[in-house]
Every structure is written in structure tokens, then in C-alpha cells.
Length: 294
Image (tube, rainbow, N blue to C red; front, side, top):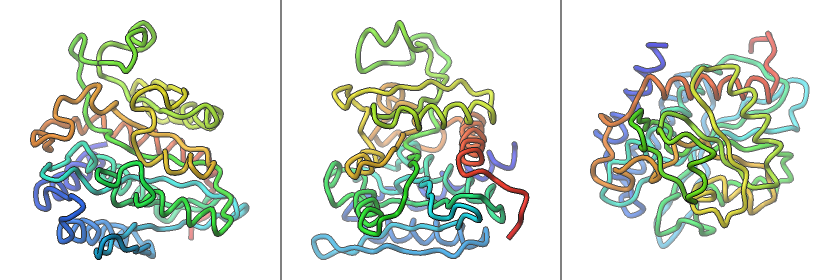
């Protein structure tokens, strides 16, 4: 697992240290990050595509690759993470950690064949001022899928997967009674969905647990619960797709959320690697890996 940890650390360091803040007006930084993502995906043998779109005179782009299914290519799974930040923040956990996980999944899955199609996507513009708007990269991507009539079985969004704490009472909650349901130590990952996506969440979680010993919790609830729709998965809900968010719970655990202290040194790369292995297990089961090689 050391190789996975090292790759995760390398990506987080590059994006949050060498590039740094990746806000919506920092076009050069966003493009530098996109170029890094494209380079890594190409290195793993993928044909890499861009989905550009324009807002207020600037061009932004989603980056994606596709692994076409062998037996059921019309059935598609989306795995995604956003690469932008709040202006002025290094964004190691939010969301260089998610991009690092996405790229490591791309490496681990490269050259494999699956029954169903898998798309790996790096989204732009998740953060304010475009958060919850039709200008989010994930909204643009989801809308395009709907227009093309793509049969999406489910979407997994990686949103902050690197911050863990073992201290008592290190985990906060959106509702006070949650503390009687979930651990009060921030040492777990959680998979979150709306009610419609509950069955998909169960499938993701069950397969996730087969690939790692990292504690994993889950929550299916209405968007009235604060934070449950605070990422790219919300865009896919808008188009009636099943979608989940995999997260370390963001501001309910990480005190450096959206701050200048969100740096690579605060992340736990051992447990990040376990998240990746859990997600790899989920993808393999959902898309049904075969022994065939491309």
C-alpha cells in the first residue's frame, strides 16, 4: 500500500503546494491543475478528453476518460471529484485529496476490462460563487449525459477524503442526535446519499467494506440535513441520477475547511489509501470486472 500512499501524497503536494489556490478567477492555476490531471491520466494509458464551457468570458473545463464496457457498455458508472478551491486557499483536503484518489483509482484500474462502462471525471467550479448553480462543472457534465440519453447506473463523488482524527469528540454532526448513531471520533469515512439513491448507496458500501478495514458509515436522508448535498453529487440528483458522496465529513471534522491551513501536512495518507482501496472494490463489483485485458 506504500505506493498508493506515495502517489496520493505526490498529487496533493503538487496541486495544493506547487499550484496552490485554484479559485474561479485563477484561470492559470486551474489550467495548470487540469494539465497535471491530463498528464497523469495519459501516463496510465487513457485517451483523455476535455469538456470546455464558457462563463463570464473565461473558459473552464471538465477532464474525463472512459473505459468502455465489454458486455453491457450502455450501462455507465461515473466516478468524479472537483479540482477547484475557494479563492485564496490551498485546498489540500478540499479537494486535492479527492483528485488524488480519482487519479490513483485511474492507475489501479488501467488496462482492466469491465462489463459496464466507467467514466472518471475531474470537475471544475464546484466552489463558490458557482456552487449550487448550473455553472458547476458537474452540472454541465450531468446535463450533457441526460441530453445524450446515457444510462447512468450511479455516480460516486469524492469530496474531501483525507482528514481523520482519533481524538474523542473530534467528530461533529449536523443534527445533535446523530452523536448517538455515529462515532464521535473522526476516524471513519462516510457515504452520503438522498433517499432515492439509498439502494445504490447500499451497493457501494457493501462492496467498499470488502476492500478495506477502514470504518465506513452511511447516511441516506433528505437535503434538509445540512451538508448532505454540499458537493457535485447534487448536480446528478438534479437530473434524477443515483449519486453518492464519499467524504471525511468536511467542516464537521476538519477545522481547516476552506481555510489557509488546509495544507498537505494535515492529511492522513495511510487512511486515504484505504479509502481508495475501498472505492476500487466498489467499482470492481458495480461494473463487474473481468479477467480480460485490453
